[in-house]
Amino acid sequence: MTCSCCGPSSETSEHAVCPADGSTGDPVKRLTVAAQMKGPVPAKQEFWLCRRPDCRVVYFGSEGTTVTTNQVHEIPGFKAGGRGLACYCFGHLEAKLVEEVRTSETSSTVASVEDQVRAGNCACEVRNPSGKCCLKDLRALVAKAQQAGKGLA
Image (tube, rainbow, N blue to C red):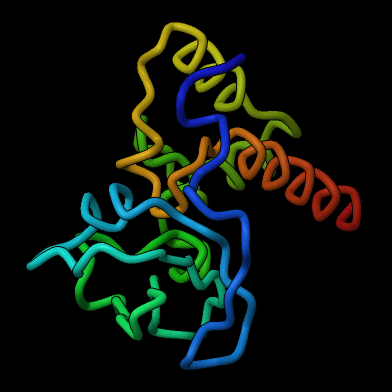
């Protein structure tokens, strides 16, 4: 299962530290940052993604640029406390996926997204704030929900 979004997400493989909270950021392409912006696109530079849920910074750049949650079209799911999207290309909500696993102990969402990716219908590089394919995150979310369900049995 490959598409352009399933490969490396940045020109750089180096990690950097978020200036707001000190967490390590994941490299992301400027194209991804530009696609997420509500307003002007920051100047060309290297960018990283801050995944820390309690930090308002979404992206930070090598030239000191920061992009906060109020500057992007949609707050990334990993900063939305389970109320956001888990799959940006096809609109799958994290809460709905977790509820599906809770009620049926499985999810058809991952297979559906795999089919769409195989068909070349994804645009993760511009739709997903991480610039990466969501399949790894979806699988992890399903596994976590399944584990939580076993704890209730």
